[in-house]
Length: 239
Image (cartoon, rainbow, N blue to C red; front, side, top):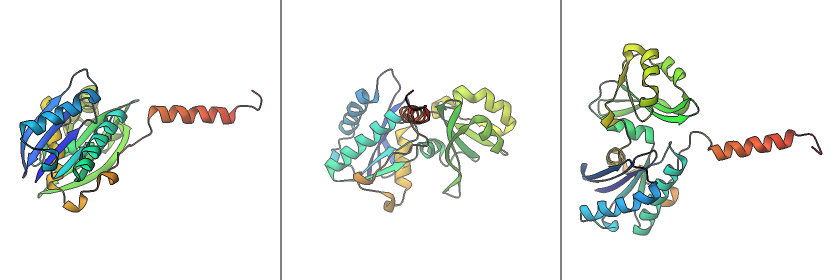
């Protein structure tokens, strides 16, 4: 099975191709360009480098959030369009679970992916890989780092772009229970998205129309609009 995977949920744009469980191509780009500038050229290069056509891809996979609202929408929209044009199925994986797959089968500890959600919070979930099975110990959520650390009572590997800004605080609050993935494993990788698709049951593959994004909280624009409406409704008549 040929899988083309994309991850653009955060700063890194990543494209990978997996064939029968083996990653045969991956390109990760973290530069000062928007995903709208980099993603399609990267996908085109991936297909050319692997001598595949869009119709030769069996499943189009994508990280469907959480993450940057713009980045998530870009990745999901691109995969939906490619799969629709090629009449293929799609597969969406939570960005946090995809991050955990960066260390699939090699980490004996619980895994806590963290993504910087701004406003003093991180996107987080907690997973473990035991006996070949993925276990979700804490469902994806947005919460302050302090609240997350209150839950850590055993050795846990922290991974993701939230490690850099919060490493010192996590180390202070969690002590010896906090282990940090090396920098090379901390960013989103499309090969991990492809791995998730490879390990998934085919009943989890959906049509392009059914593929959705995952937002754990409202966008800034939505919050500002709600605040403006709340202020307008509470203002005295004629004010």
